[in-house]
Image (cartoon, rainbow, N blue to C red; front, side, top):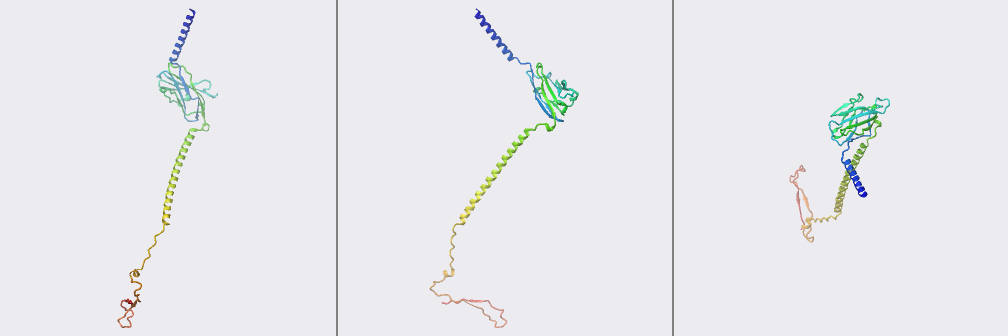
Length: 265
């Protein structure tokens, strides 16, 4: 009997524990998670952004509110002892806080996108301290405000932007690769042209070294057409110029020359 009772008690305990686990898992949490940058550096006199986002299981509505507060880390500052509200957002409207931040803070977030970021311009050295971002989204009203340490510094104190160095290095490497590719194409084209020129030169040298055909010996047409050497030989040719005027002044009056060809039989 006692054994049955103990078994029933164990079953009831297990069933109760299992039910509690299901209820805890399925029941949404009523808290809200708020996140912000742990540290932000802004150059003095420039515009900076204090980012803040939140996560909530409830739907964002007009009752959602955002509160930004500030506490200075300088003992002689007005906001050193306790935080002061610098900006308040609710029902789609923003309300600046203390006069020190009036005209220098602007809400740039989007509540529907769970963004509660704030813009500070221009940043001053008196803004060095801690900024707190607190969001309420009823019924999610329980949550720890996110904190951001703001440091307003000179331009020389800002860290170098490594992204610009990386982009410049990548662009330089790509330009070098393109330059190498172009140079390789030019060299290959020059070598190809030189190879063709050498081939043409070798062909011309071979053709120039080829034996030239011998010229045929021209035979004197008169000797080829003449009679056999055993025949009669041509005699001398006599040229005569006659003057028929009979006067002494006829030296310059000469008749055409008569050429007599006397051949010896």
